[in-house]
Length: 333
Image 1 (cartoon, one colour):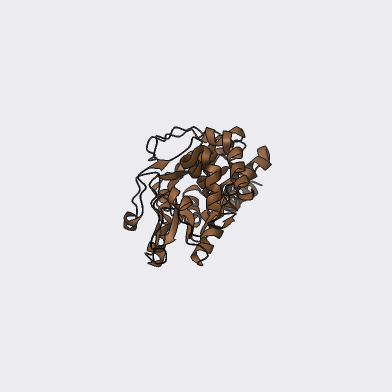
Image 2 (cartoon, rainbow, N blue to C red):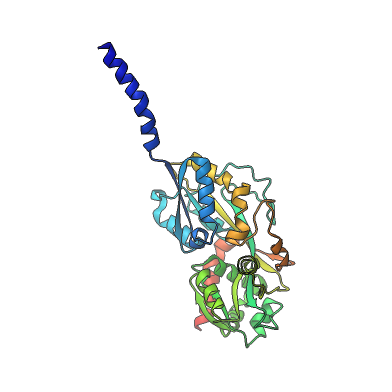
């Protein structure tokens, strides 16, 4: 009998590690936009690096855009399977906060390098950049030097931009136009409409059309030409430098309050500010990092706006519907 007990005890010792090895890994689900998780985006390398440090399964759920991420969270409410949302920008923060679905991050962000000192208690920034109209300098010899010149004088130009209802860059242009034109923006939208080839749902569609030669300029970022320089060895794509300044975007992430994996979510939020994550931003998301991580030498060739434009997120939340109606009415009148 005693011999049997000893054998059972020894068997348990050998069996236990097998159970541990076969136990499912804790999964962290992150809702984000599709360009972040694409083969050429930063997502795959970030997923690999985080999983090596967390002994977990990082699951990116790809949606069209940061606006889609917010809308999906609203629809799912407290039943969302997202632990983290990643890809909203600073203009959407107040709207997202109003849902009551997000948790405080409890992080020390004093080392963050953003245009203004970052003090928000819910959202953590992970990259930043300036919206810009990108063109091919071999084809467009005399680009506009201001947003007003683009809107009011360059009648021979053809442009493409994104829908502000479905795209954060599109929303960025809406706010850029409002910053420059104020109450006169309706007339400016009508003038811009005469130059517009199409308004696409998202950035990927419009940039692809531009590269196929379907427009002279496309709404993108001052950092977009870095992709062509570093990956393709091409220098003809540049961002127009506008004298009024350029609207700035800071992209953010937040923990979902109903997450069942809060500690793992907090670990990922800290990981976002590590060199491993931030080092993938410049040549993966083609934006500026928010820490002191080194930039590729080619970034010195990029346009750097002399002035950054912005509107408080609370004001965007208050007026976004009315400003969007201004845009729609101008296009349909």
